Length: 114
Length: 112
Image 1: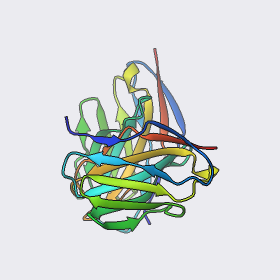
Image 2 (image 1 turned 180 degrees about the horizontal axis):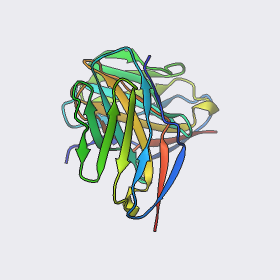
Image 3 (image 1 turned 90 degrees about the vertical axis):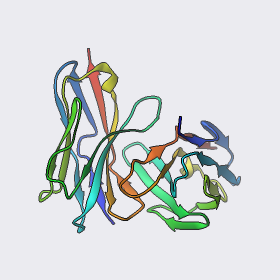
């Protein structure tokens, strides 16, 4: 089974600064999808960004971008200009192509300080 | 607004009780999932279903069963609840593997 590792249980950043959350994964597949989800205190999981493994270009969504290193099996999330509303748990997730299940990491609790 | 709805936000049950967690989606999605979320462990897949009456075990199916009689509804069943099943349970659904997975708001289950 695929595994997803987030090595940073907790992180903090000052408002308006940049922070990077780490994620590594283990798979023998060549085609798959990677995701970052955000879970604020409301508990609602929100998709932040998605990366398709066959695409070399790193995905970006406004202040959120990823550094996808396929050979290293690394998928980090960079949050620029951090805002107080970014305070949440962040989960990295992996999903094989043409497969229905999704695997998650243990999560990183991010706190943005004013 | 499209959504995944879990019937209870909080639930308290006794050891040995049979527990049903219900999940309904209104997006005509084929795939539905049940996860449990525990601190330090993230989300772990219990079961998923890719079609009506079809199911597959995830990573931690022991002590759980599921039912999907209709496309929009996916139920998680704890046949005899135990204290180690105290957890947050999240239901989710998606159309295809590459598509966005949408989550419910979770059910915090406490087994006493």
